[in-house]
Length: 261
Image (cartoon, rainbow, N blue to C red; front, side, top):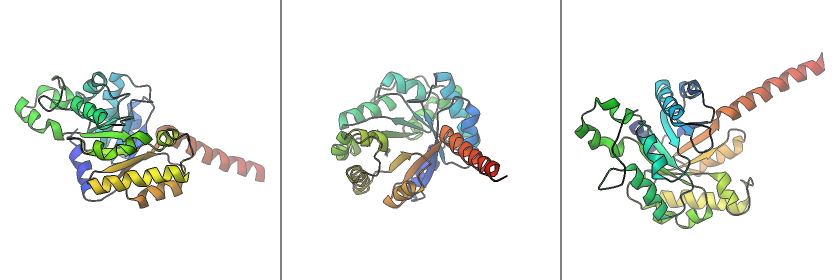
């Protein structure tokens, strides 16, 4: 809670903000990831098996570990967005936004009337009722980041209009689904896919809107390319991948030793 301003400042100061993804449901994983030094933790409510209770526990654990808590909701649906906002996350990520109208729908679900359609019922978001309503409402719109995910070629075509939507704080690129949208799923280094990356980042810089990317930890050159491309924040690596990488490294070393004895 209250870590959105820290993340915003990091982006504004051109200090690459670094995040990691969490898919497993034990909230101590988010606390541990945050404690390792990530600026933010991406709690994946789209692909992870989280219910509302687990999402809340992960948000609390992430903040306890010292990081900002960003939640990706399953879809651009006000009914799915509203209960997450009441949990007081530091940011919300809406997947597969392809048009300005879809972006307006997402942002409207995050804002109280008259700017939006969000229903009133904060819980953790207003410190369980201990924050005066006037104080809460004065900062509600800036207390968390509103981020949409650019992961389809149609979104690239409509990007300038999406970025112009009032209340949108940032966009984040999803390379896998973006590559899939042009029939090249998994070919993340294909020239046509790379051209889309470059177009997105260039458009965001021209329009003055922060741009991030969500990628895995395995390819250091791919990570380097994104940093050199000039993204403002990067979510790199996840609990499952780190387990796999650590296990592969340890098992590989032991098996090499076994062959040598």
